[in-house]
Length: 194
Image 1: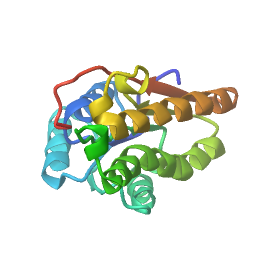
Image 2: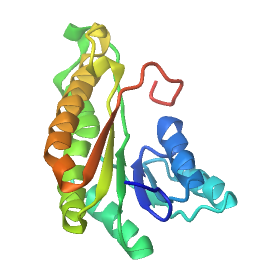
Image 3: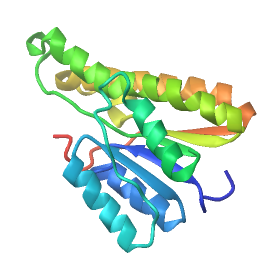
């Protein structure tokens, strides 16, 4: 992608933290933004901030743990902007506890939101990007997905390690098709995740 001007970016987890910063960064470079978050007030605030900067943005409240959420996100982007060029899969939740104390249902919640949201996003947006012959996907994993140090956050670390593998595999597949893939692996960042 040679320019961000007039591109359209869908950003999940955009109401705060890294997602909000990405929305602002892309917006300052001329990208039109579809910030997505379960936090309706937070995502509306981000759209207001972007609008004050002259950025064209549309609010989308969604729970990306819902299996059909990305259909609505896609539809919002297409109705407002007619296309999607950049997809930023940035949502992340975690739980703390010793391995023997984290119930299976909590593993399922973390994997559904952190990992399966990326899988569902890919199912919705990769065919679109392939059809248009261009685009870029950004997946936020974590330092915890690269290095084993978080025995007290294993569901989170496992989900982020899976995102590393998905991203690297997608990069191999999509690069020859003019679609970029970026894997973001931040270390500790002061966000609302805790």
